[in-house]
Length: 383
Image 1 (cartoon, rainbow, N blue to C red):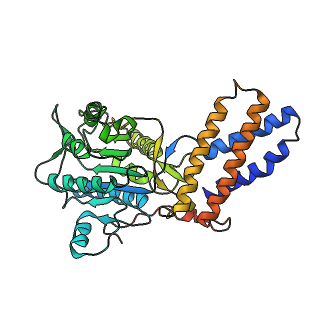
Image 2: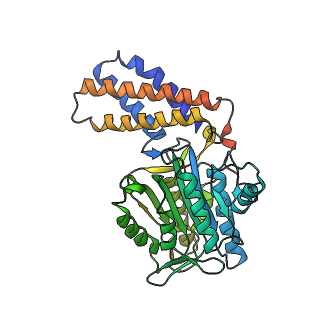
Image 3: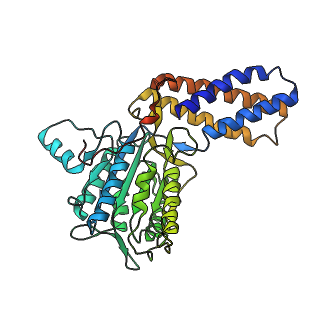
């Protein structure tokens, strides 16, 4: 929350300098309290990029209830990731290109059930990979599937009109992708089978210099733990809920990460079955190729600032300072106390000053409560 971050920044600035004159024990206690306050506001390593490419696909619903759930999950995802540019349907993008209209290429594309088939999915992946490869250093790529799936012991298939598309075909289409930061989500039944398929594909790519796979930061989320969990899943419903509001932002830094959204959705799925006294038939899983997580959405005062280059630059600096804060804290037991305290004071002051600059860049005001912008989902038609 902007309010919490601003209060924390002002608290650090107002209390740290006087701490220089405190007796040793009181100084240590003051710094401990301020460090703990900061930890409540921003912890962990996240990767924030200023360009997003990728695709959200709604597969076969089977009935109206599942169709509505999958479309709502897609809408919530698009609204969270693309608040500045809105929803861009893949078929509308193609039409706009053909008619010579200017379209926004920075953002997730959408394929609804009626448009999604094996050929259209592969074509859109190819198109998005091509766009992302023009900005491999400062972009993120997402491929998110909502629907039903099945696993025959060898191949995972995402159910679409006509021939289903396999995980192997999807990964092959992603092979030319040079973007380091990637998020893949298979929110379907039997999707746990994808984890082994992805691991095998990454192993095969590990020596491919063109893809940069040795530096790959890929997060893969599945709605089930294996291909054997074949019942229709509730995960999309609770993923959608996790993206609305700010409850899932557990560190309150106004950056909702994939990890935070995943954990919130997974916990809600577990409660879904517990509250109904049902045996859980789905157990979501997450697999990451490196430490840290990807920013999924900006919240509060940061929402709608995705195309603000100054805010993005300042957030990158905050990320670096947070990493420095964690580095300093790790030296506590091995460093001379006076040196440790001096370094801790300096990094906390730097973070506090930077947060105030972020508040200025976003236009946040203490009396301007932006928390009411809790992320209401837009329509799938871009309205």
